[in-house]
Length: 223
Image (cartoon, rainbow, N blue to C red; front, side, top):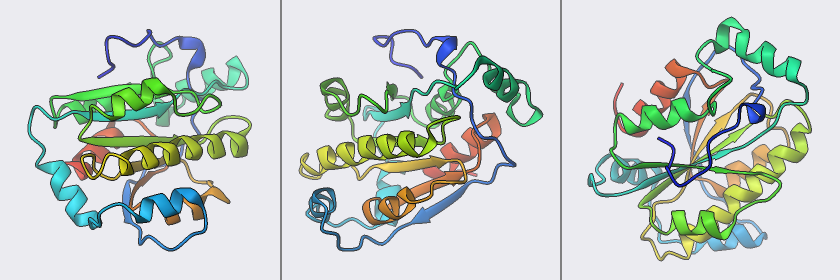
């Protein structure tokens, strides 16, 4: 569910997803040592296993807030947008809404306080995102393949996620470690950074209504 204080999503910013047959999988990563500052920060967080994180998420009180951060990406051409939204595998995506709105609604069917907050990859993690994050008990961050400038966009999205991770660490354990939703199949060189930095990654090849429901179900322990 989109926060009412945020601007209305513009159809011109619809994401051209790379759609394939969907398969949702959950990956629990083992944190490894790294010389990067973000890895050092992550390692200082009080230890909580992926299973403990998921169990805590599934037992949050109804008054706790879960923040969903999703990227705003623009397709390279209007024709690519039309193609992606008209294909049989993406029939649940409407050009008039944020393509991640379906995920927000699916999460809201399991927890009453979902705040859907977009981020612009090239702008990064801002004070607005920080304000939402520090009101949250848990955060979910979506990374998704773009239709163009793929490598640059993914790097920027991961930088946003790393900044959010660092902010949760500074919360002193009040916020659960971020859960990453990795949408797409070709993350290339950023894959290693994801494995090093994030304990829980939910992977899917594309994001439609059924897939969104599957992701929400995995997060909240329901089939």
